[in-house]
Length: 564
Image 1 (cartoon, rainbow, N blue to C red):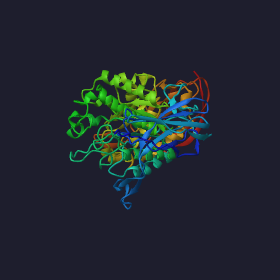
Image 2: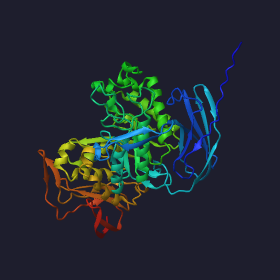
Image 3: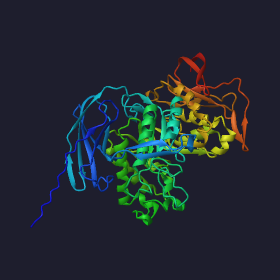
């Protein structure tokens, strides 16, 4: 007698979690899985996608993602700073989620479709009404001046901030709760985050987010294995992204970090899940760029990231690699091919077309049309003049491409020494002023966030620069670097800045005011008077504002006439 087996699937009804939404805000929908997914992180096996029909009739194709909610608490609330320990515990059952944001107002219809382990279906459409809002829209390269960024509505954007790549020890998201408001209250609006972590040197520790070292927000780790993601780590990034939204801070998310691919350090490549010795597809670290299995796994992570965080207007840019050309046996041809393929894939699946960047000096990848922002890294010895070093590195590494550029990392080579030699942060001040007035899309993002800027509370240096540039539409003008018609007096002074026919932004810098000689700090004489002769302005009458770059205040106003 034959036995007839029937599989009856329950009706799946997506649930709208955000019934009241404005333009560019997050719309979020949850749907229980109609079929238990064997691997919810492999879109070749389990894919949930949404088609969003906008009021204009245009359609967005939005990938969905596997989600587990968590709740957090401090294990030791009596502790201070990085000694605090965050604990996150699962809350509720995992499910599929769809997130999107829209520039349009009115009725949006969302149809969720799924293919899971050989079965497929389509859920009942969900509608959401999006109200008018005041947000400026996603960032893009300005069509008015390709050196700068602007929002969709044309508002100029200038990135002022620093690296905040990882939290230290086990403080988790509470670390960002402490630091982000300090940046925001001092006029900063940009941070760089990592989707990676440092492997602890102890080989008995299974490397994963929150293992007690420096940790970003990795998806694939030694603990998860290939093709599986750390949902608690992703949830932490959700929390930090939400705090960025609250503080009006934009963030750049780096996917890859070169240290995991260093075979000379056994605790790194030896624990990398892509290593063939661990069951991965790569015999050698450099195979990551050419192996088709590895490339497919990368695309899965990119897809998951677009699905989970791509909706956010405050996500400024995807960063494909951190310091890719520091990889062992670096091959520029393979790297160019990898970057082209991954950037094209990102652009094909990202409905919001976020900017794409990478780092840190390979000219072939920066020349790719798919790379929107050029991002170099710059470190210098204490004896160098910070401003001079910054501008020379800018000219050498970033300016030739005709794209927005900034230092994704910048800093002195010995922060522990500088904490003693320069507790006021004079070189930190000089680095952000020199890079901000170089033609960059923002000042350099300082690297030593945890052992220099934070312990010495140097955030106040951002405020004068933010006040100086407030309301300045950098993309509205075709700036040139200022030039001199004759030497300055005193002749040791430097003049850095930008000029157009009708406007000039100038920083007068005295390299002798503070410097490191033979390992000791030396302060030069106070300048009572100075004479600088800059060129580039058209003939006419001008108002001259003199700013104190330490306090961010106008200390004097003059009028002057330019005659050629």
